Length: 254
Length: 254
DNA sequence: GAGTGGTCTAGACCACTAA
DNA sequence: TAGTGGTCTAGACCACTCC
Image (tube, rainbow over all chains, first blue to last red; front, side):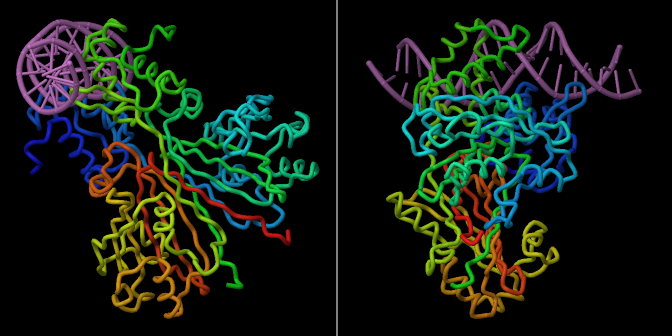
């Protein structure tokens, strides 16, 4: 175990265990030695081990179960695929439902909010309107076979939506885009911005992830033929449980 | 300060400080109260504060400077934009250089590896070949105005590359795709897979991020007209410093 | 009841910063 | 030199699991 001699104990232990996981000496699901054993191995007090282990927990490498032991986290990921251009007819549709069914899970969504609010600075930026502009906000909690997977919040400027009626009956993005089309605001250009951050308290609670672990935030913006941003949808997912895939073809006339 | 009474001290402090950051009571760059002050406020030993602060550090919410204090992390992000279909002529080209110049930074790349290796299971999966197949591996460290920003590793099956000569003189992806075209393997279909994970030791070192913080891994696969996967490039970026943007238009004949 | 993880105390000592 | 963050010790006590 040759490491930099000047390195501090708990850092060395953290790096060491992480290296073992990287090399495959410790595989997902494997049990780590007990605190007492590790303490003996490194000849330090057990408190140092506890600190090192806590660091590995907050970074998501391992998890602990009282009375049982500490275990290496799994790295299984579900995929969310975007095909560009989208399959005709299906349009930007129910990606969520499709993906879930492909994984053999039963998708479900619960509307938790549907009201008119002033736009936050962040949303206003995506919609290209001044902060505080009235927008229709619809938030939904999405689950697969009972397990929470995604938090989706859609924002439509009231000047585009016309009235709150556009949101009823509750529907997915495909039908929503059709309704926008009826109002002369069919989205034809899209952007998706992907960022990583720590979850808000509410998000961490619903997704069941520790507040220290990262989430993926995908913000999709729909823009109509006149160049007006008609919708911004924010999706929040557990970063270590999902991967995103984008697929496209080079234009043939190139 | 009304919190669940049954919650454990350090957890409460972590949640509390995180909430203050979320609400904006503490803004990026702000200094937190000293350990002694926080300890007094919550009426617990200073060790508990130190543990709470360490948790917030490993999750990236704050950072500490010995002798000065602890501060709220910044959340500034640089963008990496993909336009689909790509601008004619420029093709899938030097996205990196373009983005860096747009940010007013001077891009530079350093070739750190260029050799033939057996494919790892992960890469083999992306290339659609058996693990262990010979691939040409080129790894580059990319910086902007001296600061490390990205680690790029490209993999080409030797059956496609023909010989190692394809890699010289060292070039970016645009020229690389042209050379593949000369060999009858021009990529026409692409996928990009985005995943989040902890960095490998080597990656953490180059990017200068703590091993506990997440990185974004973008794996781009190029597929030729015959359906052969001709290249897989893995890009690794600091997850909290970058955001990815995908842009596309709905096909007009829809 | 023995072993395990998890929280907490009350100190000690060091490295660094700023006045 | 005083204040700050950062590491570490040597315990204590609790919750949980397994036998």
